[in-house]
Image 1: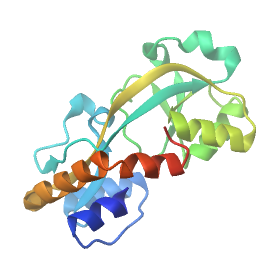
Image 2: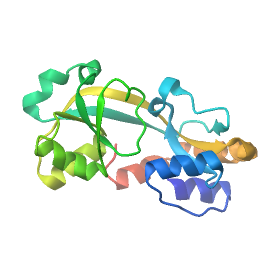
Image 3: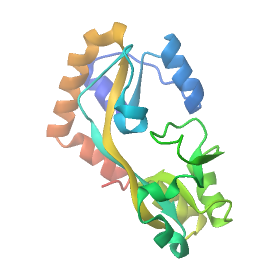
Image 4: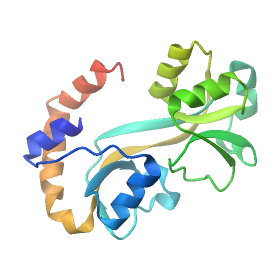
Length: 189
């Protein structure tokens, strides 16, 4: 999707893959120009005064994921408050001051930790959780929705002149069905 947006907007780019905390720092100090975010991932939905965002690209839902035997304990999102919850190191969670983070390096490792009962619940995007649960042969349940929001491109404010190019590309790719086709090619509905 990133490649398609950039190609259609005719904006040259180079990918950098950083761990989440390092990527956030790189955005803050200007080493990176843009990233992909959801306003639901940050406290109060505030991306900060130094950033601007595009129109939504697609929706993303994160869930409180648990083993089936623990599903009833986490039927409401607030049920994680005060408890140990598996999270990805460096990822932002709007309410992480209300639960005890148990950071793992990846979504894959979170599912393995859940299977080994290192914690009773993790927070993961639905398709990601299903993929890794299937990969590790772990039976999981989506107990409650944790967040649901739109994924946008977040740019440093000094690049706000690119917003129109990004938005036009996003609209074109949405209306032509290309974003949906890309997602379906990864079995994401």
